[in-house]
Image 1: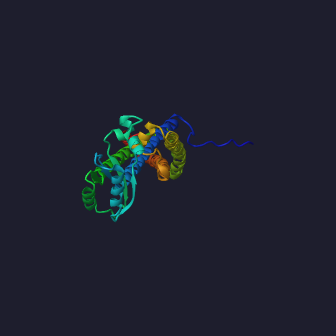
Image 2: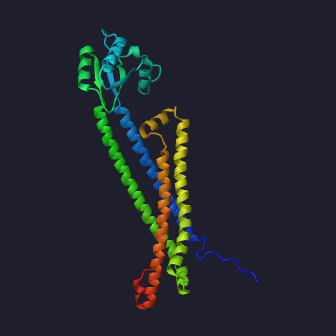
Image 3: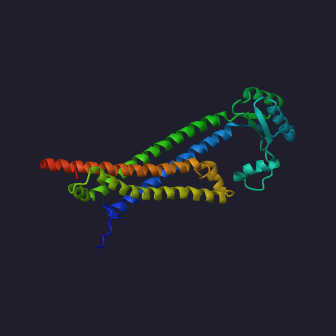
Length: 315
């Protein structure tokens, strides 16, 4: 006497299950992509704000009666004499030419053009110096010098960064809402194709919790496959973009993209967020399957107790 091997109560693979895997994978990919993009924008905005707020610039316009090199050193020393400054750097002629290279081309001779020279002063962000007093002293000592504390740019950048993060967060919420609705309806659609299995199991005396648990396990496997595929593709996309950016870091296109969008790396927290998104999608699909099965069994019992209600119960 040979015992035949038992098979799963719910078919391991069917059209509805495969379609649900694809839907979950797509929604997981979009959700993780949006999450990573919001993280990148937030990190880049914070980096911009930090870089600008911790530096001030002294600009000295050229003049026939001005010894530029001496004026640069004097401006640096005046700035460093104030409490709240850390260090000063004079931008040399070669660096100034590189700054103007995108507009005036290579091989530029700074001495032939009335190009202002710059002194970059690093300040203490927590205890900044008295900018008005520094500006007045510089103007008194070097009439061609002007101080730019970037306050206007910092305020604009902070407003733009907050607006961008809010917009990104709103888009992320919309994507997650669409993902939730799509997964819920796709799960219900896949379960409707297996309604006859629920009915048979219920009629032969299987407990509601047993039937719900079997379907829950089945859809947990499906959701893990789909969410892992979508989340894995999103993580691979960010990792590949980061590697590609690091290998082409010296090219003008990559430098411009880095200046605007930052590095295409979501960091450890970003990958943790991708993993959390995968788990949330899997749990959401599993809970939807359980609640739908319990509701189906309730509808079956309702129809058996009163066949006249069959028209009012949704299949």
